[in-house]
Image (cartoon, rainbow, N blue to C red; front, side):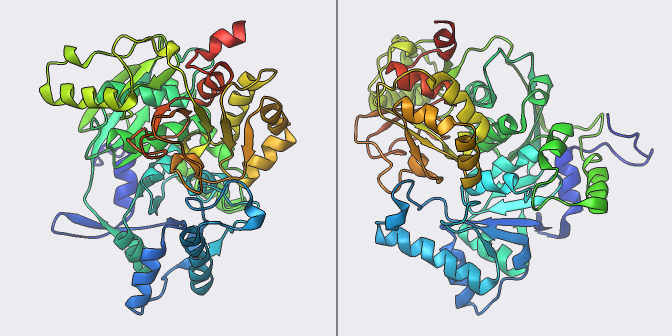
Length: 473
């Protein structure tokens, strides 16, 4: 519980507290917010080009870090980047950051990885800050109590030039995740259950605070997974109030404050949780006590069901628009209503991405793969070089390799379908990534979202499988 408020102060949510602390000015219903931290990747070239065209400089380079992630290959790096266009983008980031004086984690830097993995890993992401990045899954960083959101190329340029950004204040939404999550399930199951309940537009126009006992019980990695997919529910941002789990994760990280600065930061961070009695524009409760491992069947993250479910029949929907949409989804996915999810066969497995490429994810997948053999091709792509090194120190790479999985270099890989990390039309993947849109992993490819444990179980059985049944075999 937060300290009692002065009688004259209204209770505020964590979202309101961070927003109010970063207001520079307001105009025509929009607010100019100060930006504490800025993450840049190899897709940031438009902003640098525009900045140069205007003859402007980066205002505060020390408040940004950059790394290539979308366009880097996950294999054969010693041969360089085979696609010239991608190579030019990665090289361009090197040149732009060097000119601006921005810290850059290049392909040969052990810290290189996916920006949304590396930010928290380095302690660059901290509670109470405003953090932006030219990528929609910037919502990830809210897991550490930051107000973090994705921005467009023109906004990236604005932040580079001014260290500020114009925003319209979002409505606040609280999602209470109640109950005790069944053993072995994690953040991916929670967020798929949430989106399945509130739909892919359920949080549109809102900044969401996730709360409740099931959220508090999650590790930092699990919380990052939940907030990562906030954007898939339409939210502008997703946050979890910082607590001892957050502070223990941050302590000692390279960009985290040290000594007396740590003590001061900790005092501030402890003041951030939502005040008792604070009001939200909307509240939702999701009980996860009895959920089974979740996966998607259609072409939206909202098409989520437990593994013991069956492909739904769109004909049962009253809304004609949704009925038509879900009918088209089934046609694209090549599925028939009534088919048990556990009987659907897969062609490829992808374990990685900013959603599930952390060490906890790799440990969970390795626990399923250990002593078994993959029946379909499977890629494991660590979220960063440091995670890859840690996994290798723990012997996880040997577990995957002996099971017939490919062990790759860090990057976005098959989540965005670059450098050949794709599937052919009609192929079906079990993927730990965050989007199952048409063509996301290759033209005509069919993507099913799930947790690392479930993806590994699909790899060793060749079809969707409740990984808990394998553990009991």
